[in-house]
Image 1 (cartoon, rainbow, N blue to C red):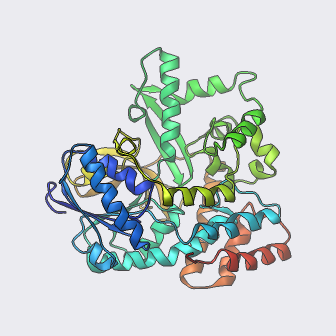
Image 2: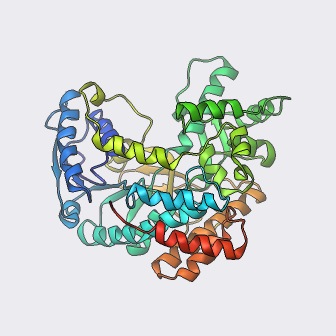
Image 3: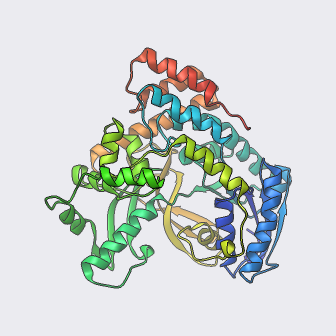
Length: 451
């Protein structure tokens, strides 16, 4: 890495109107780094427009001139000399998601998100894996010593494709889903122990699993165990209520991401392990929450409509930002914190996605897994995770096996092998002939394209 006071950061997906701007705001609040911020995006005009917005962000937050912000059209030129590479991209046009989401629905297969697992997740992986394999090769050629942070879904498979292309790459996959459960536990601490609001970072959790199908096997605050009092609380008669009315209200208000964590807590009640991801993601890895909208809504969870995704994508593209929009406030994201730790400014422990070197005992070595890791100067060290009960291990192992099948099939351009992964998914609970029909239609409708 270069000197911590001179840092070159490249954002692949630098034209983003959401994630890239959030990172820039967090960067504006960090006084310890300056240097060059390079924005690369397939949409070259979007990257150029974000240069102007970035300069406004640094000016509004009284840190002008700390970063020389550039839009560079050529990926190799953008990567060359980078200390840190951030990847957050949409694999293809948002319209690709019509095939991911609406076609399975025709066959009775419901998905809450459709970007990680299930038919939609597999097709999104088909679009993403070749792209990330290429990113890995470019990083190997242009900045082999750079640290890479991937935020793109399907997180596991995008990160795995980078490692397949360049085994010596220094990449971690980062996801904020676990933070929501940490925040829930922090609120419980305040309630149980009558103390002022607790920062989620003071709630120490042990995380195990794969991205979006992660579980908390231990949680402590000030040395006090939090899972036992949580189990006691949810065991009370009447704790779990039918939340259909709340779900219907959320549909009316377009609150697609609001969660009561009922599915995560149901895992704790029924299987003795607290879900660590959001309910919308956890639901997709097992068949019983998505048998119908009625069942799903009873947990307060709603599916995100394809039509809303199209409208919000257009809204982001055309949004005009006021100075007030660009004022930075501390966020719950950790990208800049991780960067500072890698540059030697601090150390931290957080959940990340890395190849399994033994930190997850029940999955094969080399698989991309999610657990805690210690992050320090130029080093990410995975921490051994506590095993969940065997039933949870079995569920996670099946999902990981399907992901490995998907990765190999896409890299080998083997459609029959990809279909084998497709029919192995728990959500694909339809006759084999119908599954093949759906698969063949999705190969066309979900194929990579830009519009």
